[in-house]
Image 1 (tube, rainbow, N blue to C red):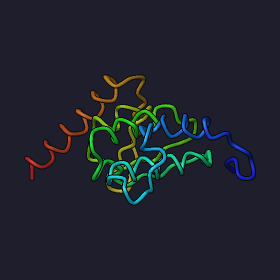
Image 2 (cartoon, rainbow, N blue to C red):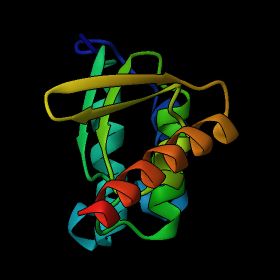
Image 3 (cartoon, rainbow, N blue to C red):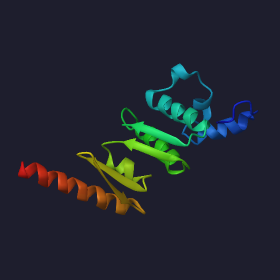
Amino acid sequence: GGWEGMRVKPQDMLNYLGGFGLSGDLATIPIGMLSGGQKARLTLARTMWDHPHLLILDEPTNHLDSDALEALQLALGGFQGGIVAVSHSADFLASFSKELWIVDRARVSIHHTENEADFDAAYSQYCDTILAEFSLG
């Protein structure tokens, strides 16, 4: 996959990196000078460069600053493939998810969502169920 062997104009590469919040000097300085959040954005840009069909993300919001989180949400929102994401951040998941899959005791329930409000409602219902089970003990 990807664009290996393809010649890319420097300006096109700068524009691509800018889409991940790495514009201006951030696109040309040595990687070692980038912050942790900026390195995370660069890693995402590199991963997306190959046009994968599926992304598997395990707690991708950990250690991201707000700019990196926003860049990640924008990139995932425009991603054409499938995404499997595990996260404790409902807001993050709602920003790009079309479905909420809940795995509980070897059963999977799928909630289709058209927008963030639908996702929030399905997630809130799930949380209410968990809290009710917990309180029944």
